[in-house]
Structure formats: structure tokens, C-alpha cells
Image (cartoon, one colour):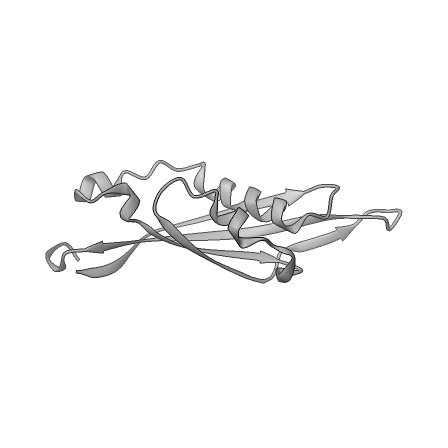
Amino acid sequence: MAMKRMVLEIGMGTDIRGTDYTKAAVRALRDALWHNSLTVTSALGVPIDSMKVEVKIGVPKPEAVDTAQVLAVLPHGTGTCEVVEGGLEIPNASGTGSTVMATAAAVVWLDLPEETV
């Protein structure tokens, strides 16, 4: 068996007023995932929950993201989550808060028999 990269999904999410990095990250991953319907597992005859999903989130303050909440978005398979510096933070006019923009990438891997690789 060999792990094979099958899909790359990308998305963007925001928290308009709350400066909540986790909320923006969750919305970014949902944006990436909810615009697709993956049929690759059934086409290859492997269980849908055999997917391994690598999630990468970009936000201005990586330490402010709860990765467990981000991974809870995954509807199938198992995942890992890495949070890196990226995205945007735009302060409001009064300086009392910010809009946070997060970016997300989800890479789907499948462990396939050598003859299908």
C-alpha cells in the first residue's frame, strides 16, 4: 500500500466583528470542504473514512486557533491540523476590534494498493 495525494481543497473564512481566530479557521475549512462532493473513494473501492486529511490554516495569530474545533469539521476520515501565520486582520475604525480572515487548505490522502498508484 502507498499513500497517494488525491485532492487539494482551499477556502477562506472570516469573523467579521469578534476577532475570533478559531471561528474564522472553522469557516475557512468549511468553505473548502462544502463546495465538493468527493466520490474518489467509491470510485477506487476504498472506505470513505480511510481518508487522511492534512489541514493547514493561515491566520495572523496561529496560537489563537483551537485545532480540535477545526478538525471537528471533517465529515469523514481522520485529520491533522497545522496553523501557520497568514490570513489578515483588519482593525475596525474605533480600534476596539478586528475582522479576521483565515485561509484553509485540506489535502486528502488515500492508502492505495500499489497497482492503483
